[in-house]
Image 1 (tube, rainbow, N blue to C red):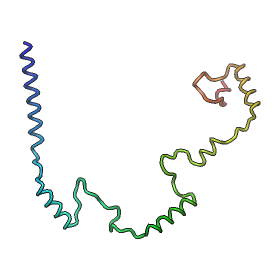
Image 2 (spheres, rainbow, N blue to C red; image 1 turned 135 degrees about the vertical axis):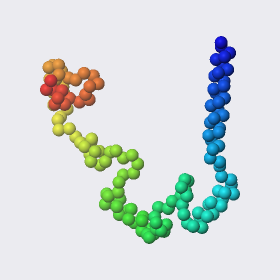
Image 3 (cartoon, rainbow, N blue to C red; image 1 turned 90 degrees about the vertical axis):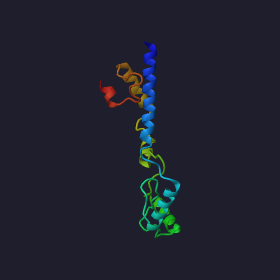
Image 4 (cartoon, helix red, strand yellow; image 1 turned 180 degrees about the vertical axis):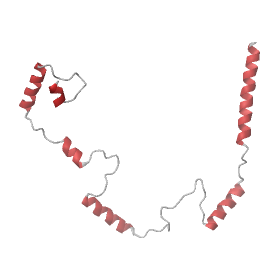
Length: 139
């Protein structure tokens, strides 16, 4: 009984392997000469191929500005602040200013507020809140 199952599995595997090979060869590959002739014809007629072809950025393929002009425009935009930050710039100048802003409370006031919240058992549990906010005190 076991050999019969093994033979069935082997036969199924062999069928799958041969069937896959026949499907792969249904679309015969082009010869090197055919590919070269196709490329020459496309180059002469100035048409683009479908897959793997390179396309130019502009319609004419020639830039209307010089390198010096583009550099001068970029410098001017950078000086005026219109240039977007490079890379993964999640912190903009406004965000940095907000993060580094000084607190309106003195150290003594903050300590007194924390002591009062501790006495009233209104401090958040560990890991729930990084700072004492209005919602933590109102509980």
